[in-house]
Length: 109
Image (tube, rainbow, N blue to C red; front, side, top):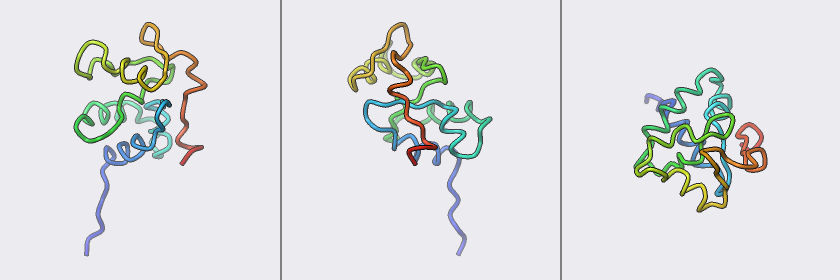
């Protein structure tokens, strides 16, 4: 019997699904947790392809708290609206009090 292999994207989705409501993490934090520290961009590509997969992609931002993935959401402001509906304040595409809402997979999982 052949062991099942889990793709990098699926591993990214497994981590992203564990980000708590009202918290965010970064592409790089997920990549580092998965042992692929230089693959933050690949995590971004995974998030772009995550729609319709029950993945809270809106909770994954860049390392400075910027909504760099917002262009991949329907509508002009959907990513920000989703974050704000969880109590996260966003001004000019920047998460406010980023350190206080940041979720670190290496510590949490």
